[in-house]
Amino acid sequence: MKKILFGALALCGAAFGDAALATAAAIAPPLSPDAATTGQISFSIKELDVGAGFTWGRGRLVYGGHTYDFTISGGGLVGVGFSRIEARGTIRNLTRLRDFDGTYWAVQGEATMGRGRGGKVMENNHGVDISLTTTTRGARLAAEAMRVTLHLRQTAA
Image 1 (cartoon, rainbow, N blue to C red):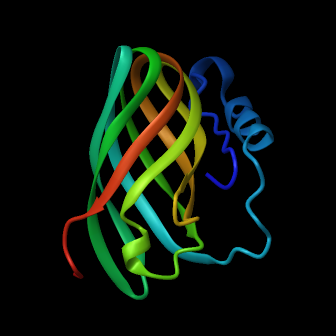
Image 2: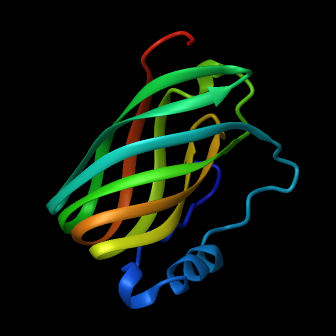
């Protein structure tokens, strides 16, 4: 992997509020100023953990004037609990649609009891960067290295 990514996710909105977003911004590495935004992304996922965790869901990519649906699956270590996550964000360094498919890596922390907000940065082996703003619901405590696979479901909408 070309660089190590750090993200922070949902520190429990009721207790920490906007401090969670400030922490996420301070911890996440800056994206390259040369990297132009090449797409938009939104998705809904669920995360379930008892030590090892599992992540699954669906999303939508807007790229090159087209909309593409995709699936998300994967997981991480170490956490306990369950949360639903809604995310929206931008994609950088996506020059070919086929480079979107693949495995993305992130390091994240989450402490959600009820509702929370946060951010996450992910990168795949093609250098595609995804920067996200998230909203979480549930009861989950995790500090994990995550590996998730994003896979396009259709050619274009």
